[in-house]
Length: 215
Image (cartoon, rainbow, N blue to C red; front, side, top):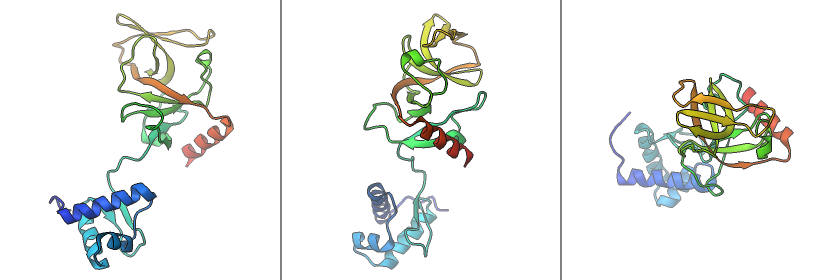
């Protein structure tokens, strides 16, 4: 491994690789890079080997399009599936998909998706299988819909605060509000709901979540 900075030529090659992947969703071939750079294949190969050594990308010789970018945040936000109670739901293994949201909803870079489960918010027009978009950078204020963790279990509720007391209020009369101290170690506001989409085919969502969780 080398810690030396990239030369201008190496940075140019890396930028070309990034641009190609951005536009085509696949890495370029050596021939395509050579044509862009107007150099021969050996020069491209040498640059890629050096970039690999400097850990700017991963290059696998003798494989067509054997280039992989490293430490790149994937397009789209992570979407978490139906998570059992007591499970850290924002863990990597609970990600069932990603979704490109920036063109539809404004929010921070930390926005994530979460599928609704249950009927405690049915009077707020939320149903099992709806996909919520949650922003952890927005401050929870009274009247906002939030995702909270109570004793390790995620829940979606209306947020109300009175001093140090927080009430998580359902939108269904058959459920009672949850009252907690905002200083309770077993309570945490994960984020504020900033949007929602709904699929007509809820069975397709259920099947997709089950498949991703099993795989």
